Amino acid sequence: MKNVLLPTDFSENAWNATKYAIELFKDEECVFHLLNTYTPAIVSSRFMGTSMGHVQESNVRDNSEKGLKDLLGKIKKNFNYPKHSFKTISSFSLLVDEIKDIVERVGIDMIITGTKGASGLDEVFMGSNTVRIIKSVKNCPVLAIPQHFEYASPTEIAFATDFNRFYSLSELQPIIDLAKTFKASLRIVHVQYEIKALTEIQMFNLNMLRKYLNEVEHYVHTVSELNSVSKTLEVFAKELDIHLLAMLNYQHSYMEKMTREAVVKRMAFHTQIPLLVIPELGMNTPLKSSSNRENAVMD
View 1: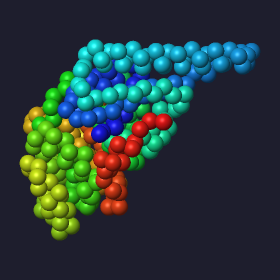
View 2 (view 1 turned 135 degrees about the horizontal axis):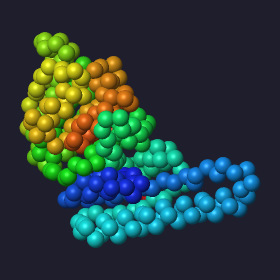
View 3 (view 1 turned 45 degrees about the vertical axis):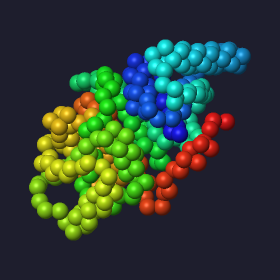
View 4 (view 1 turned 135 degrees about the vertical axis):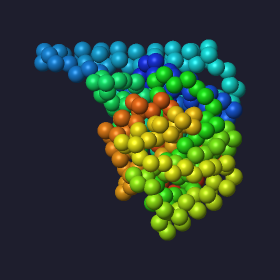
């Protein structure tokens, strides 16, 4: 059973991500954890009494709980997948802190969140919450859904890599699982500033990658960089009709540029497809077993 965390602020882009998540896992046993965090606005008046502060917190909490109840009703009105169940979490907390706690406590398999669309000078952030989640959560994949993206089964998945790093199976598992579920073609895309032969280390890592993907239809594409890595991947995704772009979040490679805040923000703005960011897990991280998942329930 999968545990999927859906942070929501009850906006349209959060609803869009929720719809995507439900459709993505419609045939799998899933518990969706709907999370809304709240913090009362800071009262500026020094004459405001303590009791008023409690009243304000109570009002904000009531709004959060009502919002989650309404969201649950909306989901049940629009979807009826028998393998799905839902839990709501209303928390007086900062969003990223609460997400990190829930990921650990519940055993979350994936966080799915919406990204805000923007253009020109309005490009403030992905939104900033999504960037913070990607940068802060070190043990759970994050799937960011663009604001206006309509669900399409991910039968074409791109995985961006430079082959400079050895990937562990636990890191690749979310991509493999999606590819198998949707019988997808996996496009391994290597962006080079200048096209040249792979080094010995890169060849070794590519060969190991292919071994991991032996049950998945996959192709390797080497492409020249166009202005930036993000722009190159955007063009690649458009030309090959990619439904989902995946990448690992690690340092010391060109991919580091993709996970720095400014560039991740830029990617989210200009990439019109879902972006799956997988944290660096390393060789010693065990794959989650089904028994672990069954034991991961909310307190």
